[in-house]
Length: 538
Image: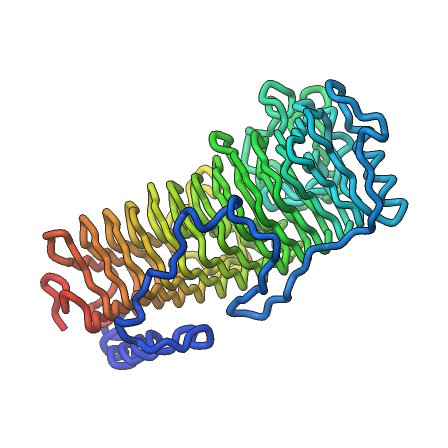
């Protein structure tokens, strides 16, 4: 029955692919389809991006979607140094820092300065109209003890709302706030109770019952009880946020995490969390209108990450991450250079990353979700990226492992679509230079929710393996030179695939296509070199 249906739809499907390849996302491109457009000369080098190249001025934001022009928050002239309120080096100065912030907030706003020196503190809560500024040479060390982060505050941990330790620097329902300067922030001590009491018994969606009211999901770590680790910096429900210039190291968990925020600028940040499990660099959580620029991240997990809530709890909240621009950034190490997911429940849309370099990261452009995570990602754009990788250049993983989702990690049987079924669609990558990778494209999608409408064009690729995909509907590679040690295109239940103006260099081996569950009319080679794969009949 299936083969008869494919025969009947042969001409329709082939026409569809050609139309798709010519028109996909035409709103964001007016380029003609010819090899002369293949150019990587404008792609930045490692010495042109990252925190060391931070300019004073924020240049206008350009994006293939409507994006507001974000501006730095401004503050009144009032200035207060924490030593004026009794702060002394060698002692814990949490009360003095917090008193300074509260006073400046009460007096209408201004700047609280952490001067040069070594300072020790517990959790700090930032307030409206306050700029927490670090002088060059200032080092702020955060306590490793759970007691210094109580009482519990409202926060989100791995996409689930809880009452827990929050963040080393926390804010909730504030506006016009900033953390600036050239200081070093050092996370909780590794031998303290914060790290010893981190919940490791289960994944969070199993640890917390989705039916439990958020007010009852309290984890304060009394009597050695499990805690959900504090993030490093997490403004929550905030508007008009600036984080600029500082460096972060030795976090206990994710580093910079805006949650439910509107209007966020993160620029000139340096992060080092290599060796820290779940040590993500910058995670945008269900926030909108975000600019990240000129930042350098070396991480124990993903570097630049976009999230929108997890599973049932994320569906309940239903807040997307949208209108996000990442530019002129450097990912030096980490699991993924730029990652969408795996918490995707509220939907991730309108992401534009351009003019960035991934140096020695694992995967380059990474997409993660799971069957019970919900939501997904759409309208995602990537331009002028340089990648030197230890893993795949483009990787979609929508199934995950049994540790997290049990038997739902198994591709078959095909499940019925429900509110927790995620989707990835409408993705463009253009002007891409892949200097080293283990694989050009790797897709593990979901049979009942295939990856849809992907375009990669103007690419120069070096990879060990070429292209492997399962459960895809609509994928175009155009204007590309691809040198691979293993020139094999492997396809499982994948259709509407177009390679156009692609030069395949198999380094002495012949191009080969291996197909399962599909027929040759689902795959088109147009103006390619070689013209057709080994044994191809068309």
